[in-house]
Length: 333
Image (cartoon, rainbow, N blue to C red; front, side, top):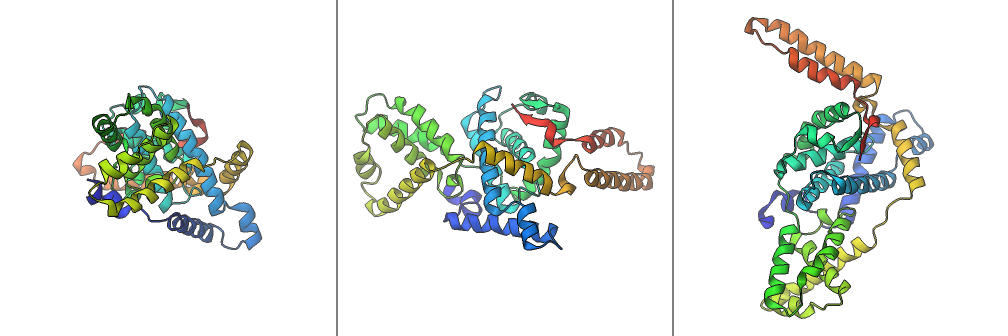
């Protein structure tokens, strides 16, 4: 149940301001760590601001939505919803300058497939990407544990898809609407748009579901006001004002969402490449040297424990491929 879930307890926030403050804190932390010795003017020119990070992440969320839409085999909507929750949560605790969104979003989708038991192998998954698929596989698998750690291992997601089905069944039972299934295309379009907003981080699945249903009804020139006030909340009208305000706010956020222009996105993406943390960039010399040292340390430990006859050659070969991983070569189809 959502009411007792980790999602409600730890990952549902009251206001947009609360989310903005969390993102700003991560932005300030990163710049303070990596911009020592720079003037304020130099920092502004070199690093992404919190607002620029947000704009960049919105565009990557749009890429993420299109990737999921084109995925083969067709990806269920609840898997997509789970992936978006993971992506949004990750960047409440991290800066896009620390971990490139292109790498994290692919990992979020892959982890969502596993958690939601949408059974695709890693080979099937990367077949949906462009570029070097071996490198794409390395990126995803090397980031999977990091992602779970940053989510505090709270991986169960309550999406609005189940409440939507409940509402449609109830409308068929207790309303005079002809063919309520004609609402589905509008509902799906609305849910897709919520993925590009902070709605999943602020509202209960049932509230989002009802907002989607009411939005769809309005598009079909249907009025469900009496259904909501009498059928749903006839015996609990004291809760109605809170629900109405939540639905109004959800619809407002969805209707007012805007993506950055292509020109702005290209500018921000280039800026990110210059200011990103090179220690987490698999194509950088710093990253390669760090990984080489880590493997050398592992080899030393392995030599010390050689009396146990442990054979790690296969594992060493697998992880050594990470040294040549280039995120720029991994693109979403």
